[in-house]
Image (tube, rainbow, N blue to C red; front, side):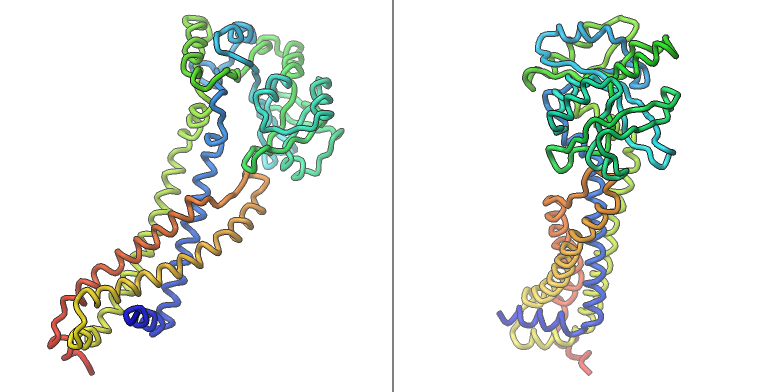
Length: 385
């Protein structure tokens, strides 16, 4: 109990120094939490992947297409429940600043395979029946103020031209982190137009989405699908939806590595700051520690005072940092809500914040504690006055 009182008084002795150190820890914890959350956003697609969905694409690259004739043959593979298909469209709304994801899909099977896209029955029926119809996510509709019945025009990049769609539905995500910034329209509309304008590009799809009856069949179905088209003009690569998304993440791996390195550097820097603070504190109190030893306090008590002070400062800064992370994260999410599916501070991030606060507190106190505990009484008393 006496040690705790001494630790608390020591923390409050140099209030300006302590306050600035706590402020530095608060900023470091806040920065670390935000950076870790941004890294987590990269993996949302992986986490939202269903174990019963496979993606089949051209074995060479996603850039190359597959014949629509593969559809029936994939359906006949044992273990396959549902098959859908589509093309990445890559259209631009107004200009490049207003780009968002847009795909041509087969409506019935696609919505069956993706139940996380929640669409009212009447809007779903209207979308399926209208060849020029499209559906958009709630966030995208909110961004542009769209409502059902509106006419939306995209400028094609992969498929040149002006493409007009009638908004037939606005879907919401079943989960908070479900993607709601995407536009989906009929693959048939795209294909029929290509037959008239560029016949050689018609009857081609960019990918197939394969729904399997049970997750444990995913590996076998993948092999069977790829074996079906072995040595054909367009061989396939079938992989789980999770592996498919991880392939995209690998393309931006350098960015992720840099962000993660920066997040850890923040912790290392604040560790050096706290260590310097504790070293200054211990150096100023050498005489006091000698007095404590002359009163019967042992080296472990002296070390306990220093570690206690270091940990208390770090935990106070950590607490403030965590408390600030939520409002700052909410503000960040509101500002970039149109570009991010969600900005949620995860429990694992909070645990990392607390863990690093303890680590910084312990590491920063090691050198001062060792030095203070080894001080001789006579040598320490000479420094008094």
